[in-house]
Image (cartoon, rainbow, N blue to C red):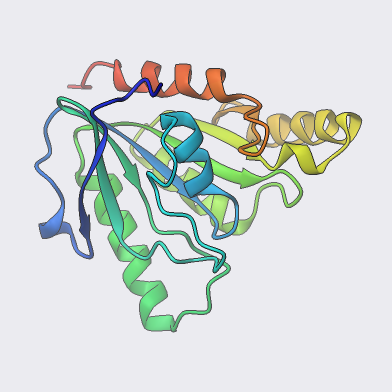
Length: 198
């Protein structure tokens, strides 16, 4: 049973004027293409194919808004880095992300989805910079933890935690065996309940 029985897709946006009304609270999910962002969202919301997964990385090209419950939303940001896209598309993406982070007063936190085997990439650091520029709390999910042995996974977590410093919190996560599901859902609820900064 999902903790979000009323959760549903609202709309996709390709430019700021198409964003949903800036009310209530929302949490953004960002991640390099192929890091497992859609799978992580589906596990946390506990709804199969809630965010559509694909065998082709980089399919999320738009800002996708989902309602979790009244006045609380999850926002699936475009995957980036793996997909072969033209420079024009990359620039549009960067401008769209900058507008999103600067404009959204309802934005309370960000989940950054990182493949534990790749650790932090330039893209991930760019997203962290977006979040830091607007004082947005960030939580990193080190996905695909099941692909590493326990010792390797522990070492990777320590390295990322050291790399991030105070910039973000971080945890292990696996959509395959649902490792870290409860911790991630608790963090989502924590972000959604944060008061609006004046």
